[in-house]
Image 1: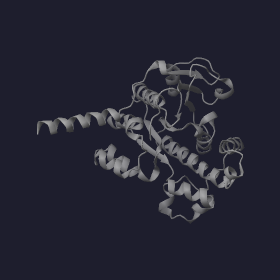
Image 2: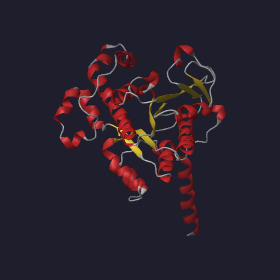
Image 3: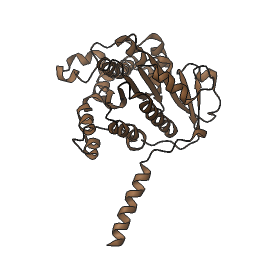
Image 4: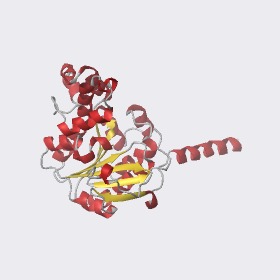
Length: 300
């Protein structure tokens, strides 16, 4: 019996280690401003203090970047929550699971049932859980910001007008319709990312419309939080493409709430992370954090 208990406890310890976020190491990243000048975490925190929304744009498999995001959020909470409402808004949860997130934050359901019901990403436990748990501890709102994937898929197949057939209840998990068209700069960037081949460009306008729904949904979630909390600060996590160069989600937010003060932090890994390549990195964020691309990837 003793051996069985030992094996069970050992297995639990191994599972806990496997799901833990890596420890942030200052030697594994460098911080710059948008022009490539050296900057510090203190610079980012100061900018956050003068902002209404801070966008943390990530590579989803960047373990160092996730640890850096968690540290930024922790320090923003420590510095700002005494004077203003902090909200954590996440691309990683879809808006139709908000009630489940709220039930978990309020202690009504267990974490196991929260995870079973909320469709978390595969890397939730080690990359995003630390931020959600901090928000839970501090009684801060966690906001599911993304449009449900079934509606993203609907638009990518049938175009944005397909959403007009949804019920009033279904539309509650979407931004107001019709949502805005992407800017010309963002559209060109997206199409270039998809590639020039006929296969890549097939149905590209519908795919771009679905991407814009994604952007608009996240922006609207941030705007709703800020409207409800007049001196609030939204800290939003999303894939870097959505907010690089203050495009995409940022553009939609400024349509919903034109006077919003925004700081964009773009985090990406590079093998030579100590070199700011001006041809690649200039102005992709108000701050650009380059992490060590040689570190193991975070697995989804």
